[in-house]
Image (cartoon, rainbow, N blue to C red):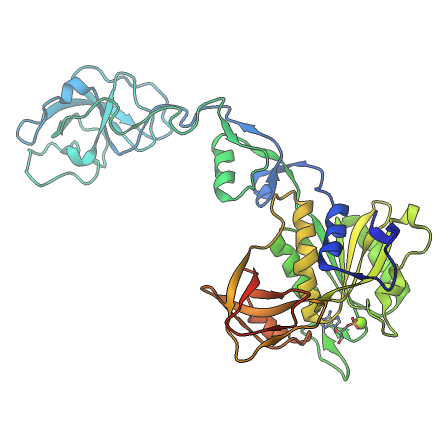
Amino acid sequence: MSTAATPTAGPDRLWSVDEHLEDVLTTVHPLEPIELQLLDAQGCVLVEDVTVPVSLPPFDNSSMDGYAVRVADVAGASEEFPAALEVVGDVAAGAGGELRVGPGQAARIMTGAPLPEGAEAVVPVEWTDGGLGEGPVTGMRARSLAPEGATGHVKVYRPAEARAHVRAQGSDVKAGDRALDAGTLLGPPQIGLLAAIGRATVRVRPRPRVVVVSTGSELVQPGTELSTGQIYDSNSFALTAAARDAGAIAYRVGGVDDDAETLRATIEDQLIRADLVVTTGGVSVGAYDVVKEALSPTGDEDEEGGGIDFRKVAMQPGKPQGFGTIGREHTPLLALPGNPVSSYVSFEVFVRPAIRTLMGLPDVHRPRTTATLTAGKPLTSPKDRRQFLRARYSDGTVTPVGGAGSHLVAALAHADALIVVPEDVTSVEPGTEVEVVLLR
Ligand code: AMP
Ligand code: MG
């Protein structure tokens, strides 16, 4: 599956960022659709065209609290000469259709209640005496309907046109209309529409399940004491959060010791719940590069997935990367470097687009823009490497935060953008237009 088989591959070959990304994105495919309950489908891509089964609103109903009347009965009504109508009853939201409004009659009606038979319009309560039986007092209007129910008579001070304050059946969507097209991303309003037309479940591509495994015998859980030489495992937290932010259901498996057998067993155990595996650490050329040791191709790849190809990618940070598929299901696995900034940048550049591809999203990439570099001194960038510098973006300008050091987690936490310095550029003067990836 992965490019381990391409003729140009080899341990010394330098991959461009675009080549590595293309390898990832041509290997991962959108997940098979499933039927999900509406709220579980939030953030997912719809794979069916949804047709409206029943018009919205399903029946003519009142848009105001007031009185349902016949137009002829209130024609010419005024403060001085109100129309006095007999109130035949109440229609509340949810009421059935028993009531009928005949000539000279009105029905008290609440917002959302069905327009009774015979009625042609609704006069808002503010244009009436509210059934309180009071005389027409200029400037004084009922603010609410009489609490004790329909009282016999109501005075109406204004005429009403036919259909006034009536929401017509089907005025929102009609039965047979297309409610939502396949490909729609389901946000809150779309979920609201599906519920409004009576759908309990929908067919969508599910959220990918992403397992995040960090490696390193120096790692300990936040919340416990550090001994000499130990550090807190921050990568598994940052990447699990990032996977969730990208739309995945993310499982954090933190801090596996630098032991190839343990790591292999851990990953094997996790495959049952993984559509994608992300590891951090252990991919460079150190003595304890356990991920490389555990996952490099073994020759059994037909049974076990394509094997993970470890390679150098022409970027900074994030040069050592691993990618391939593992297990019987050929689950894609991205092995990211261990330095916190390297792993985060690698996630942004390679893993996030992979997650969004699994989700079937039309646009898998972060928005990009150009901005004017604001900095005290020129930026320097290594030749033949694409550099991703942490920065803050504001209003067309971008300012680096921290330096290029890939251990600088505090600076990363204050960044909201990445400045992208192309491979052939080694220095960027302040005031220059640069390319920026917006992280929020
Ligand atoms: P490695 O690639 O495993 O050699 O790790 C490179 C650097 O990143 C080392 O300084 C590690 O201690 C650090 N590192 C690796 N994994 C993590 C992690 N999960 N959280 C924080 N730092 C890490
Ligand atoms: Mg390590």
